[in-house]
Amino acid sequence: MPIHAELRRHAMGRPDKPAVVIDGAALSYGELHARSRAIYRFFQGLPGTNRRTIDLPGVEKLVALSLGNHLGFAEYFVAATALPNACAIIDPMMPAERIERILQRLAPDVLVADDEASPSAEIGRRLGISVVIAGAEPFDLTAPGEDLPDADGIFLIGFTSGTTAEPKAYYRSREQWRRSLDRGRLVFELQNAPSTLCPGALAHGLALYALVEAFDAGATFHSLRKWDAGAVARTLASEEIERLVAVPTHIAGIARAWAGEPTLDCLRDVLTAGAKLNLNEVESMRRLFPKARIREYYGASEIGFMTVSTLAGGETDFPIDRVGQAYPGVAITIRDPEENDVGIDVPGTIFVNSDLIADGYLWGDDGQAFRVTPAGATVGDLGEIDANGMLRVIGRAGGMMISGGNNVYPAEVESALKTCPGVEEAVVFGLPDAYYGQRIVAVVSGEAIDAKILAEHCAGKLARFKIPRQFYQIGAWPMTSSGKIARGQVQASVISGDGLVLRLSA
Image 1: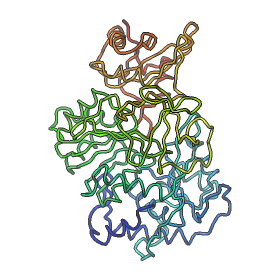
Image 2: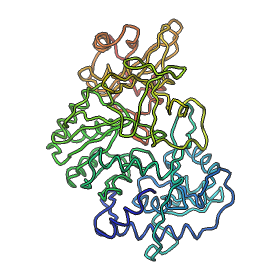
Image 3: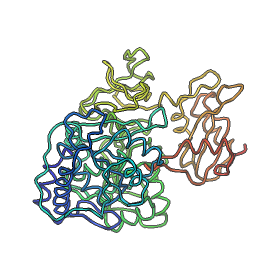
Image 4: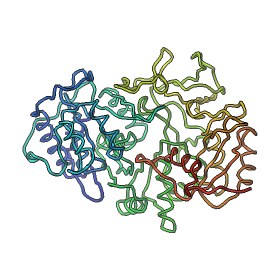
């Protein structure tokens, strides 16, 4: 990990300060430093498997973590990312067959799991991988160990979905994250080490980066083993958390769970990512966190930060339909299919030039998602940029619908729907249609509302061909482990009529 020196400094200066708190159980900076050193020594003593078929230059021990939000995640991650180790983060909530395919391809030297009977542990043993169960370690965690070395090179392997169901394996270097952390400390004003809560899964980029960001600053990082909106709200209040990092759907859940309770005045900063905030969400957050600065960033696991904006509570309040201006050290251009720069106020593919971009994929590169060309790097998102350098994201090219011969992007229709009074969230997709090719379908949550009102609202904001032809209402969204709406499950429910969604009549 790119912050071992900072961890040592925090451990020496404030050894008793909590570094990480999960469901109320804490690990201090002194304990984190000592325990990760012991784990590192254990890793270094393991024999190599000699089964690895993937080329990872400079990596001696490849450690796979399938721990979820376990208190031990922090100490194992620190040890697994110290030179000459690298760490692969596997979400234990993935289907077992997907975990097995990942472990087969990675052939790690050791797998760390959270339960002896977990699918990950069983798969690892069956594949002949050394398995360690966090909390039942076969070694002395109190024994002294050597200081954790840190240098350049690969330290992290992550997995992200793309145009196929199979996760893509990307890898990152320590120097990339070191540069990102150095800039973020200033951009997000972390010098005073604000206590941070992120309720997302540590196996995903948002929460993992928030954890490392907190360690870099010497802050206390809070989370929960399992997502529970009420428990998150109570933790924010009881621990007087200063900074919340979460996806919009998590924040909406917190607002519902805390309805009728006193406002959370302790929050000074709320940072969101993963989906664009709409006006209703920002206004809800203003009421819930009246003293907080509300910010959001736009980025991708493979590219890092692209833009950052302040939507409320700061010196600059950005227009709600923009995701902000370029992050420090990042240059953004909008390009046509031939990769020519199209200039301002013209839609096209978003390209980025920066020194925060991942090295590439170990596998899964289909040429449709992350790619690097002489024009820069892109993940295929579409957008436009205005004269002030503010970026508007339209959507992902792969998600484009063609209805009646017209190109329609779900994100644009969703943004329009979410400005309708009473609508909390919206998901838009296309279904096969004999006449239109694809008919546009919208699923919304919130107060009961009829299709006519929704269509009339869209008519005031969208071209006629972009207005959904069918509307459905949903009570509770199915969620992924990263806190995002499981869009595929919503679409499948509309098709199957399984009762999760209700057709709205005009």
